[in-house]
Length: 211
Ligand SMILES: O=P(O)(O)OC[C@H]1O[C@H](OP(=O)(O)OP(=O)(O)O)[C@H](O)[C@@H]1O
Ligand SMILES: O=c1cc[nH]c(=O)[nH]1
Ligand SMILES: [Mg+2]
Image 1 (cartoon, rainbow, N blue to C red):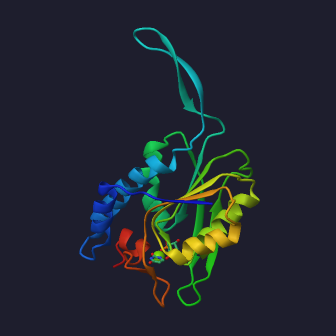
Image 2 (cartoon, rainbow, N blue to C red; image 1 turned 180 degrees about the vertical axis):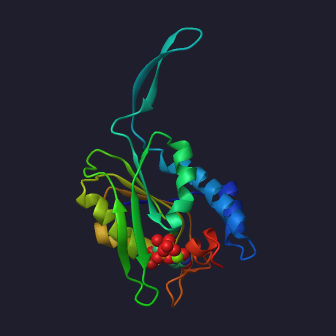
Image 3 (cartoon, rainbow, N blue to C red; image 1 turned 60 degrees about the horizontal axis):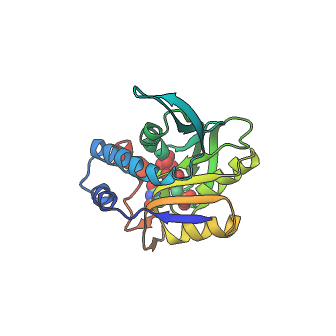
């Protein structure tokens, strides 16, 4: 398993504005979208391509195009939906599957309330979108499900991660697992309610105007 923290001044600048409690919902959505596009650039560094012949106005050449089968992008509802447009802007030919998951606020256990994914993920590069990697329960369950469907190459794109969550994903699948986590930052810790500190609060509520 590989963890990549995207170290870039624009990422840090936008993340700071996203964290700020004064940032309203429309601005939060825009910043999340912009951040994902920057993270997507790194997350897709290993995207498979195949040779593609074209003719420019000057003559023939061979370039590349994304290889088949198409990559699959999987936002984890609700908050992951706020990352979908930013990701598919860079991967417009990707297919999109959906996982609806919610964490119990008391037990912090994740449960799945909806799924709509292709039946067979073998050979597909899968990109899971979830802004927050907190205890790791949600991401572990999501990746386990993708593996059950045959996935062998999973990249999770998160806006923020807690060290505890990164550790749980690593220990659940092993250091050699074909998993990459790309995030804008790994914060200090989780608090007693399972929230990332300093974090940005409840990503779903802030995206969708609940607070
Ligand atoms: O790493 P974990 O401890 O499992 O927590 C992270 C999950 O919690 C949040 O979702 P939430 O359950 O609040 O659902 P929502 O997206 O509908 O707000 C967040 O969007 C992640 O999916
Ligand atoms: O800090 C956190 C942890 C889980 N989910 C969130 O939205 N925020
Ligand atoms: Mg939430």
